[in-house]
Image 1 (tube, rainbow, N blue to C red):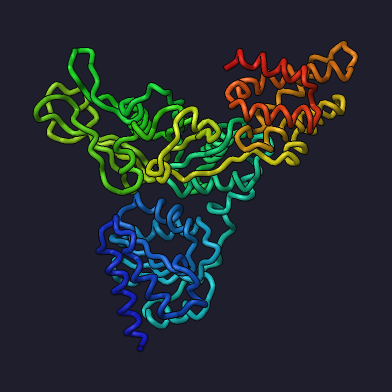
Image 2 (spheres, rainbow, N blue to C red):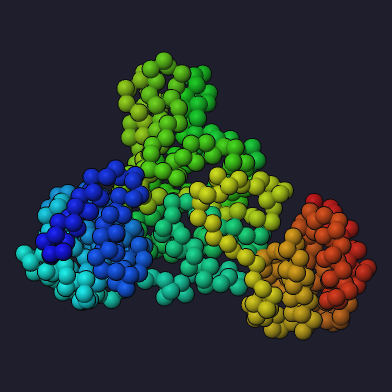
Length: 490
């Protein structure tokens, strides 16, 4: 096959990508197959090695370059702009984003070749040069990493909850970068809320380092059992003038203010029942109809949609309070950098609300497990340095006993107050074994007693056997006192 034929086949694959509907996830498959078939597995080892992007407006440039393309890290990319004026913006953003595998990017004005950027010459870039002899290749030395590589160096700047693994932090960061909805899942006390808030804080301090253009202070809400779809999303409610009118819920309020929404302890509400149109909206690019503004026969509709820009906006918001229909829908439009984040207490899933598979699939789920006892022992050592040895050993053994039984497993946060409690209790006292054991039991009851009250009898018996007989933290009398007092906390 001649170079001219190769060129025509490549441009035909680009044409298919440009003309396919935006929601067609396979629109760039012909381009990927062209690279794979033309150069083989050694050059194109996977379907992410070659990418295509069609940029139709200046608002799309940031997301296409810093989020979508950087997230896939291609070796070769074909970028098309529907307007020639977009090409300078595209090149400017390419200069500030790292693609570690990049060898060559071909830029086109529609279907007209405009520029060939070469980062590392090889067989493929040589062939592209011959296919497009009218272009003078621009050999580019990749600048020092600015945007995509914030982690791992920036990871060290995140104040971590006790004993949280750096790899978990990276998963949180990259999930937020790559998914519209992210939930941190784990037992109580693992630091899910703190970790999420710290990561969001770091992103807000330097959005560009994490691939975002702007991140405002998020809205934090804690769902309750009484929540309905109206609380989360919105719906018709009785207005001050006695009419039924649409009132936005937490999601729409966050979009209207261009702020992310964080749902702490999300499974305190029955989200499976109240998520409504969010299920469709989070999994597609399609707008979702949320119902009419009022009971008027010609009432305007409220619509939830996405756009390709980073900012979130509301169109025709005044129709929510207008006395007569305006003839246009109220459109809540989330930018592609808008995020729905949250935490989920897996240990309480049977006592609160468990998510179904349909809802769970809408979220990138990041596990935040309780650290292993050895990691906990090392992390808590600085807090017990000046206390009797029995304090460190007792706290670690209590944590390990909970860790041993999956249904009783909890995170470090429920134990970290114990050293301070014992320290205060020993002021002016002789640190006898009996007093240390009593103070440990009291602090343990304060931190973990509510959890004990919720355990099933067989779980509580197994935990007590481990604490008393195997690890010998407390004697039978002390454990009986703990169980008795914990019942008052349930």
